Image (tube, rainbow, N blue to C red; front, side, top):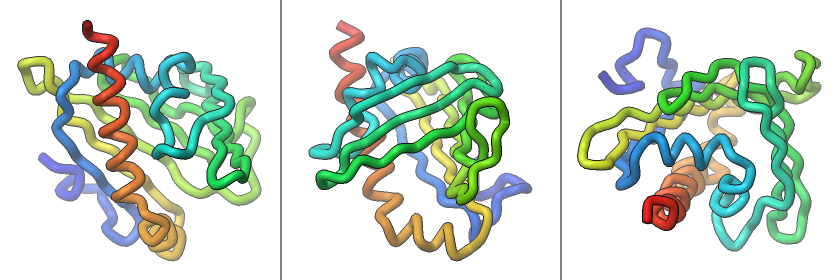
Length: 162
């Protein structure tokens, strides 16, 4: 079953990227949940992560700061669901302590499915609160940007396997 065939998938609100990644899901999950690893690949190069503070548990903080074209961008959120090595769900609709944010952008749903031979089916769903926000995210380069953010951890993970 693909994300697009799930009963709660909404093509006007949800953007989906699915890839087969040449790395074990445990390593990809570790890359997503360990600040020391995440800073090396989380934003498309030449941009970079300048700060990362993760408390990977339901209600725990998911805070990152990026440097993009000389501009610092802060993204603060919380984890909504954590299933080790299988699924991460986080949102910027709330910050730690369940404090609502004034302008939430999206909720991310990441799944890591073992497909054998050290490979993982990786699916990223970006859910938006309205069609305009989803369209804006798509126009900002969701598929290229998030596609890069699959390739970069795959390359980074190869160094962790050896």
